[in-house]
Image (cartoon, rainbow, N blue to C red; front, top):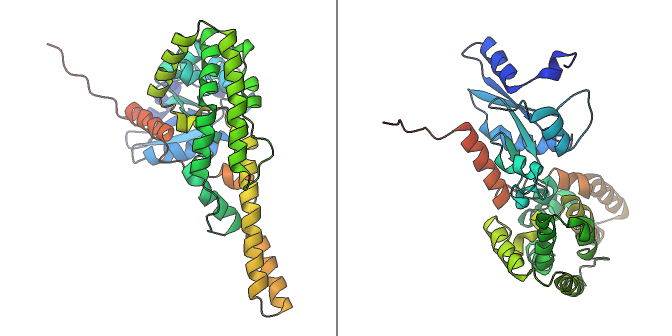
Length: 337
């Protein structure tokens, strides 16, 4: 037994504390998350459900124990204690798509007090294609649209989709060591990216994917039917060829795909704005002052991307909010005769 009262918090304990505060006090619901970086995201999710009757407090499972990660949240500290007043909020990872074929996946998918992102991770939602132009504006203060992020990520997703199905297939079959997420990530890298060479990058990616798919087909000659069945099931779960990027490993998408593309776009937008200042400056002092002022007004890419909240119309995010709404507004049971 924990030595501190805070070590033994449970949904029942929070319920008792709520009762002590009186009938008019707002009900407190604790939302446990995996890591410090997740607190802001889940705050933005849950704040819209706060009202005169309830509020949320988002925190790590233990302020003393800095162990992070979903397994720590679910298995070690929370899974026996969560309930109506204490919930767990986690990245879906592959567990959503595994649909209960592992104990952790079963917990993520079927525990009514565990809420997940549907997308692989928060990073995937931060990289939601329709929001990325706004990120470039926040970074550069230049609203010139010079790159079609939505079309690029659509083509990227369509290119990697066949291999992504194979990745999930291996995990569903319990043989993921034959084709790990790291193996998948190495294939779907785009390498050195340039705006002028975006089409060629997609073509090279398609070629790499096709080669690996053929290899996996040879290694698994009897997998055709189960592969096609899984492909249809994944579509029913929200994984379409054009949105696959939302379901691959979030850190890989963020660090190795989106940030390099954003850097190329933002570098060009900054140069464009600086050229404009150089052209329009009346004298050298004005030019230097304007360039200095502009330089101090621009922002770094990664912090802006991590604070991007332009994913509110993304399908995974809408499904997450629907889950929370259902949790807070359970359907009334019809009386039985």
